[in-house]
Length: 342
Image 1 (cartoon, one colour):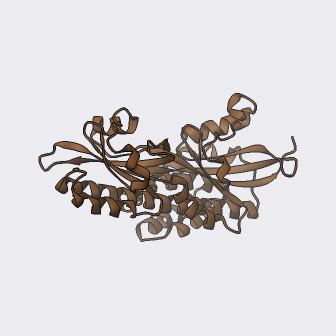
Image 2 (spheres, one colour):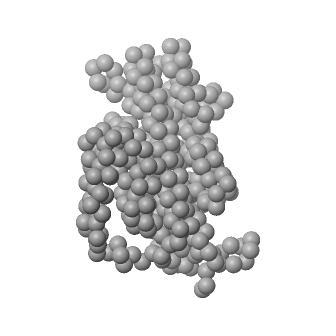
Image 3 (tube, one colour):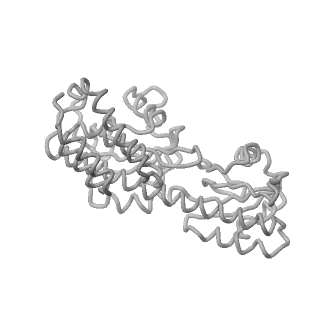
């Protein structure tokens, strides 16, 4: 593969001299056309955490790009993807830019919520978890309203008993209950580490994700935890809807187990992605559903039925990962590319 002698210096200059993501992605697209799929996905993968801004990690990004060029030199020219015209190239670049922006916005929102729970745990370390003490009402109230997606806040003692909760209208029925057998409670007490769960059924009713932090005394004695339940789909929707407004793209988020975390159609949330294909009806859909689950980032195509118009359409999808504390969700952007000739 013939290399552009100015490619590496320009790449390094953009990354190390404060070039924006849009500039970087556009640079790659112009330089290597269709091959930007592989390189940009490498870039998106390492910048998932908004803290990846140090010079060291920018160097790692550059190294990944160089390695991508070296190790894929033979296969890039025989990529199985169909040749793209200018419209397709523009669409690909736009989809990747939207995906990159959404990834940063959603992760940043999760990190901000995580910080709020950590700060609340620190405050409760000072005032204790005694539910009869009004002093812990303020930090819990502050946490509950720190983000519009917040649903409930509870504190749990080391023995698994729920000590307090807000709002009272949603948590009063579980005060005094022992939740020590719940996986997320058991995991935190076993590891003494913060966690974020998948979407789970809540004892107080409904479904939500939770961010939990351990509460310690000054002498590092674990006395319990604080847990914030929040609506993940509401967070994603807030950014996804305006991001694709006026475009032919759609956004979806799925859990690693294949269940839909977010879809523009709320009725599909909680259902299995390509549910019929997971039972052997469509090997093509089964394959991409498996890749969504197994691969941190990627690109793929598939066909599906447009029931409204009674036709089979071809679609392409890029995906990347959002999440924290070991919980990963695939964020997917999808575009219809044509009518299938099958």
